[in-house]
Figure 1 (cartoon, rainbow, N blue to C red):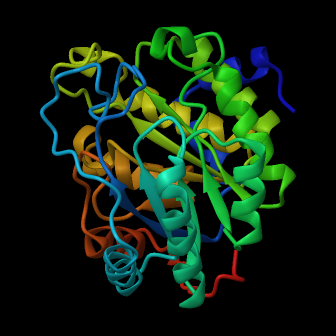
Figure 2: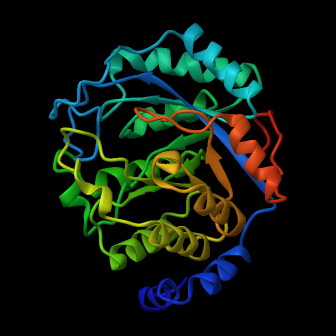
Length: 310
């Protein structure tokens, strides 16, 4: 594992040299995944970037948990558009007991159609993690969001340790782990290095990197200038170098924050996967647009719809 000083030296080197270094660890194929926003809004947590927090008047549409049939219709559309896996995402700190059984049925339904299942449903306790594994959940997504030293500036209604403990439970029960961050929330360069090192220690299979899209009426509404495209590329490259075995997944903020040139560089040098279609409360590129880019730079799109393919 790299030291913080070593990664900081790499971060500050000539950009082209840094990108060429990260390219050494790039996977052969690009994976597409898709998310289904199965429950939106009214979250009790005060994450300062989030449109779904009930602490801020963001005026988003809130709705309860979708039906299994609604989720499966959306999942089938995602697969038709090239998604290699589909994630069920719900707002809230934890899976509500009243909704958990329906979430389990959604996972079973995805698996029954050979779609690789993923769930992002909040902080888990041990019994919930065990049950998810027993019904065959392939992958669980739960971000650390930022490094340990900066977490108190992001959220005070749960701790960094709460997030890491959930990641450890996922791994304990044999599920794949998708665990990443949001950059551009006012963190320092050194703290981006800390994120990379902490993720390397957690060792997830997938690391989604979101770029903050400031939401009106949240505390971070004015944070559009907290990171530029040069530093976004540097951060992606450092994550690839620090976590060479993980899939670095370009996620939220791709369309809103990056030029076409920067997106092309990211996929050429340091990104192994991406979320296609829209995100939770922001819009993204169409699957066709992402696939055209992958073809343009000469990389292959991973085509595998079996839940046994990873």
